[in-house]
Length: 268
Image (cartoon, rainbow, N blue to C red; front, side, top):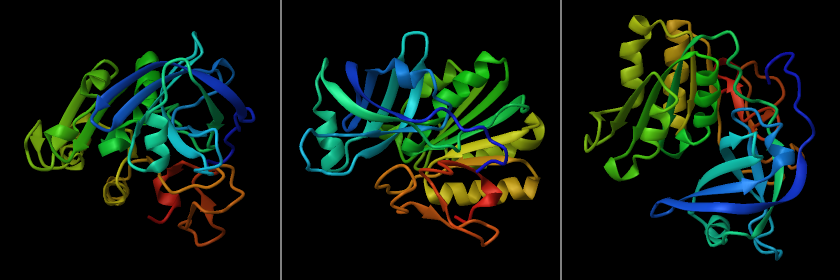
């Protein structure tokens, strides 16, 4: 966890009304939830624990990152992939239904103050929690260089949304079917010197995060990464989302100290 980071207000449990629902891709859904008490306290990089069913099956809530926040109207937007029993149940919710959520969760959020020229690097569904970060930085007139990497043209998502909050957006695909052929981190490597990047913020597959951690170390650039792990409680009680700290001391937990960490503080 970032030293001296002031903790946000305690998470709240509430019933949030589903006011808008959109299917972005065959299995990707965006929900807009009316949740004023939570929306006002959210920081970029935090997440919600969502109860997907009124029954006891499935028992565990699902951690879902926060995509966008409209604090003026008390609306939280989440984007998730329906890829298992719990998220498939959630995807069937209808407009007007009340969804039990806990949030905001995660004491480790993106810390962007002091960095005026940043790189935002996302891979696959890891792009979702980066939008609120880019949006807040845009509101402060920072320079935002965004790099989005996907498997192929069918997986590309949120390109236009990121263009609205970035100075430059580069999209890459592994197979070259859309945008630049290759990996987003390779384009970032090319741009670091000529764009004078001051800090890197990243979320995506573990192999990408390992690569960006090494790149940041090589170039001596601060780097913050958002980690994704399976969670039980979301509060640091069940200890199921432990990650090893770089200094070899006590384990850290993605739900509590994270999900955002300084890259050089964790082993990945």
